[in-house]
Length: 281
View 1 (tube, helix red, strand yellow):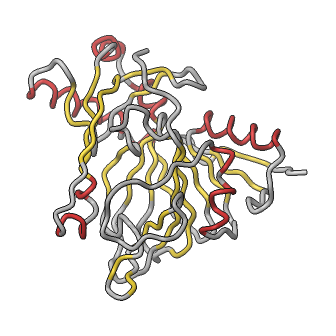
View 2 (cartoon, one colour; view 1 turned 90 degrees about the vertical axis):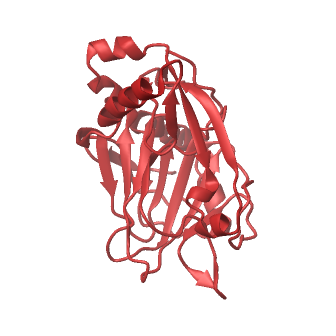
């Protein structure tokens, strides 16, 4: 049996699952229940796990089909083509992972794809004493906060999602490596599983609202971001070694706080393939 209990992680977003050892195969009914909770709460956390790069993929299999890495980088790459390191650690002068340091603005992973990654997951190995926290914003609740007239105004509108990987791959930027991607998605769509409406915009990757002059687009996007980043929809996760955390890229944004470059930080990361092209609600 895979018995477990769960409770709301915060008033804003998230569910904490207890009583599972993700090294053990999950019964189909348990995997289905986890997936339902994941969709309902947007992020799901299981603490106290003992996973490795080779076992993390199977531990996350209930989330969907894992996606292989595919973008250029100058960092060292591990043997597992589905799992990558998020780390500031260097070996022989070279980074062992991606996204090594500094804060990151709110975003949804690969929102610039036609089919955005359905989910992402992280497993914490080494954590700095202060900082490097991950903030999660509930995009269901962000939409609910919008005044009725603003909901009406943005109905049917689309926004350009754009990203250049070298923005946060510092070594790649120095080496002149650039890999830009972009896609157009509705500002509001109904989640494919919960059918709840989502406010789909973020500070890092949403560049413009289509069909509006630049100034008007910027003002409207700035207004929408005040709801997408409202304190009432945000949970800040303070990592502990052994944390497994998965999030839904269709119903949440996430960001990272800064931390000291003198302290080591290592998390293992994976994503699942996108199975939904956002459609206007």
